[in-house]
Length: 101
Image (tube, rainbow, N blue to C red; front, side, top):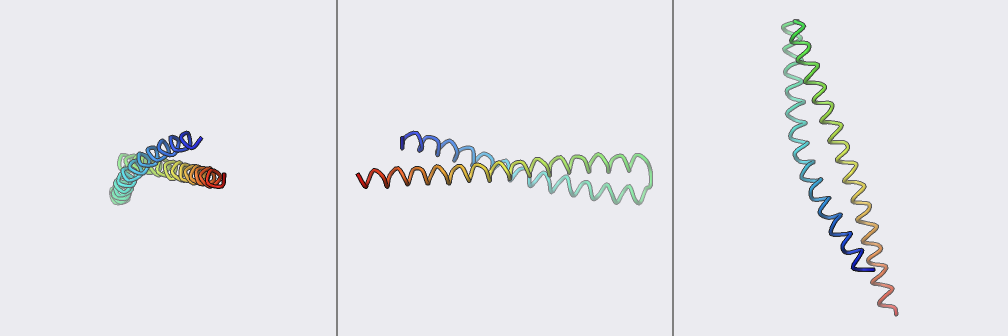
């Protein structure tokens, strides 16, 4: 049973590593999209043209979509960390039980 738990722990660890790397990328992209959206908002206010307003709305949609994606990554990481904690507890309980016997 300990081998099964260890295998699951390794798999969870690999997924966590990948999701954390994805989160770093999402943070960078979100900063870029948010900055671009702010710039386009100012341009649309200054130029007051329909095209500038549409550019801002499109950039804002991109920024919001990236914010949702980032939020989903954070939630997935939290779930995997909880799973990892449960597996570590399970592994510790199994080792403790083996030592008692």
